[in-house]
Image (cartoon, rainbow, N blue to C red; front, side):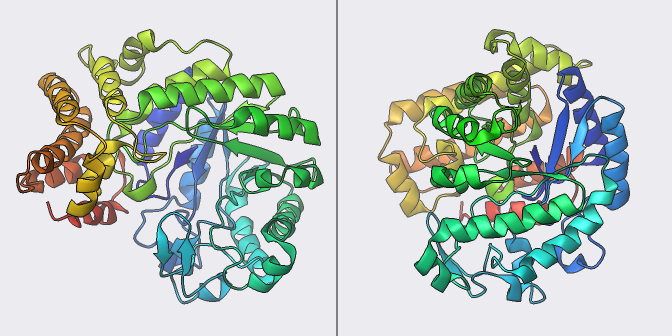
Length: 454
């Protein structure tokens, strides 16, 4: 599952190249995670700056996948994570909290991100299904429904106060399931909210597919897979580990390895139907594409029952992604992926250097209290060796993004003014964006990088 809604929508050429590699790795399903990046005919205001996938492009990619033994499964988030819709006046009336809400992690948000769980919201989502689904040959549909952060803070507050969040959530989920079934499809959905109430899991229709996600080395796959299996979903649920490369410039390779291995182990043990590797783009999708490559290989190995062989990763990356380039690209990508393990993780799922890149001076100062100068210098030296390799420009960009962050850290740690200039870095970022990604979303990603003073 590739996130195409957090600024990066792949070009058609790159998407086809990626599908060719997925076929070689024996992937048999692809999802393009969509919030607002399908060109719905009557909703241009939502996607006009996003370079969305068009209906014709979806049909072309669907045929391309089918010819390679891959099912292109439609994916449209249908409850939470619809802030790109709700910020517009035409859709605000559908919001649970149109005037803003308190996010449990990020604090106050000025607009809504979750639909009010009403018949009107379900009818609106159904109009999207009606337009989206005919472009796919698959009879599956991933409806999302994860992280409805503000449910109970606005429109549904009185009912949630009386009945609790989970019963109302399940009621709306069942509305969506019924719509999916009316279209002749089978629903997949994120199981994070329903897993908070294991007693409700047996009440789910047995023709839907819960998708159990978790992105850390200690995600509770064992418990949640057991709950799904005992509730009657053995053979019809997915495990969904993460590629570990979002909120990072180079990928959290070891976390990804452990997370994927754990998901596969527990999925195999409890009768999961499949493993859905998720590649997200939270907070601007700043990570270059090569950070994804190791996880694609590791997940294929684990899903098909083989041990993950990290020693072989460098050559495998070279063979799959750089067949016409000098050897060594994969080795550098793997070295980059180990950078994040040299530093503490501020909060999952994120890396120290990604956090440091975007932190204000006060927050950076607080962050640096968790680490000593010698650790920062060791990372700086490791980046020297990586940059000296002089390989693929996108790999070099990963190193340079980390380099800017480590220089900010060193300035603060040594009591000097924060001085690293990033103007040339931003030019490089912008130029390389267009190699594999569409223009839509670039301006927003750059603005997030410019928003930090230095």
